[in-house]
Image (cartoon, rainbow, N blue to C red; front, top):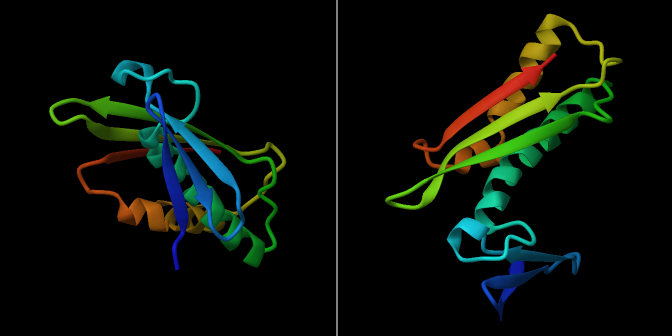
Amino acid sequence: MTTANTVYTGELRTSSTHVKSGNELITDAPTDNHGKGETFSPTDLVATSLGACMLTVMGIWARRESIDLKDTKVNTTKVMASNPRRVAEVHIDFQFPESLQMTDEQWSKMKDVALNCPVAKSLHPDLKQVVNFNQ
């Protein structure tokens, strides 16, 4: 089954519709590549997907462990390279609520879950993933 339908709407912009939910996502070329940079670029979404995937699988694990990760945040930084133009690095910085209490063993397991999320395992090994768990 199709996941999304994408249409080029002109001016270096696309509109994608998630088939199952009907939600819409707009992309724009970044300003350093002839675009307006008014919304996520496709490469922004690659980087953002990594952080979101890590946070999602951490949430799945935490729910099973009766741990509440609500208000955990992730800041994502994309680093581009040229020749060829590509995402070279993604920096993921987690910020956990001060109220979060976990054992060392739980922290270790949760980090392992995050680092092995489906997006992390789908990205090319040349793409450097720098992950910081700020405990």
